[in-house]
Amino acid sequence: MAELELIEVDESKAYMLPYAPAIKIPPGSEYLFLSGATELQTGRDDSGDYPDDIREQTLRVLQRHTVVLQANGLDWNNVIHVYEFLTDMRDANIVHATMGEFYGDSTWKPANTLIGVNALSTPGARFELDVIAAKAIG
Amino acid sequence: MPIAQIHSQPERHGEFQHPPAISVDSNDVFFWMSGATAIPLYHMHPHIDEECVLPDDIREQARRILTTFDEVLTFNGLGWRDVVKFSTFLTDMREYDAVQEVIAEFFAGTGWAPASTTVGINALSAPGARMEIDVVAAKSAN
Image (cartoon, rainbow over all chains, first blue to last red; front, top):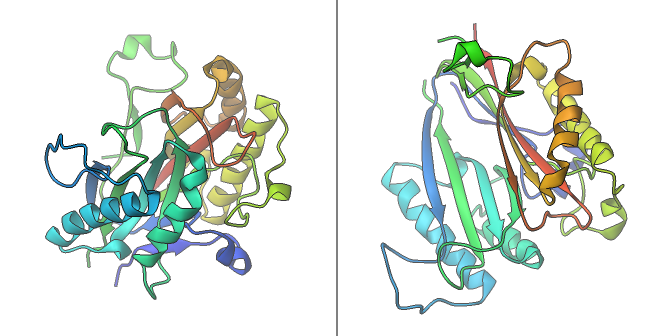
């Protein structure tokens, strides 16, 4: 049976990384490309009523993606790559720890690219996550 | 569909280091690789300062990054000819040309270059990091 494969180049050091060095996708897999999400909940909301707290923002972002993944029969174990965009790189450790909670007991972790940026689309947003998911077929 | 460069204006092929597009097939095997800066591939999280000491020189940072990907590609039985997409993030866009020269060194002899996006950004995960690349590779399953 075809499966998504988490590639560790050095298994003895796998504990050091909260992300995978690479993810291998078998032939014929289906992909789902999700738009980047900030803590904005649904559609256009100009209330400006967003939490400043990075953990709370991260939870909202992850919950938004969870809804999209589930609507397509997927979960976080199908996520193969994420772009993390932060307006303050000092928030990275809290973001990673919060994302880890969404994996529970799973040993899965996606490939990851972390970038510090000037600004995000929602005023006050500190974190945007762009997700690529895949499902092995056959 | 073969893994191939797509040249929308074939007569201008050669003017650019990177092709406008690369075609792949859903029956290829894909490798999505995490972005790497010039610090070692395996490093502690949260970061520890001793692992994040970097040379300031952009060419040296670029060589370290590409050497990391050379290791990941080789581990998976791949080479530079199998790379289909580069995303390059620079903290100073004036270093674009130097970075491209180092990238060309690694693709030398392959006759190949991937699709490429380069953007200037604010900051990277390691203090002193001037450059990050992430890579997508693909290989025909046949």
